Image (cartoon, rainbow, N blue to C red):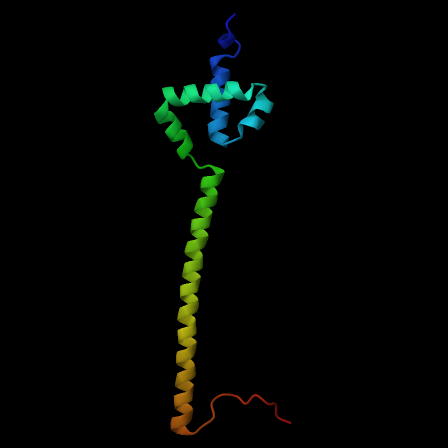
Length: 119
C-alpha cells in the first residue's frame, strides 16, 4: 500500500475545505484530524497549484478577518459622519448665541436667564 492511499480523496477534500472555509490554523486542524502538519502543508500546496481559481474563490469568502475589516471600515464611516454632525451642531449653536447677543443689544432686553437664583 502506497503512503498516498492512507487517506481517501474525499477526506482530503473535507480537510481542505475546512481549512479554507473556517480559516482554522494548521496546528488545530492537525490535532482534530490526526494528520501531520507537514502532510497538511503538502495537501494545501498541491491543491493550490492544481486549482488556483477555486482557491481564490475560497479565500474571497467572508472570513473573520474580512468581517473585522468591514466592521472597522463601517465604524470609521460612522465616526466621520458623527464628527460632521457635531461640527454642524456646534456651528448652529454658535449662530443661535450670536443671534441672541445681537437681539439683546438691539432691543435692550435680557433674553438669557440670569445665573443666580431669586431669593
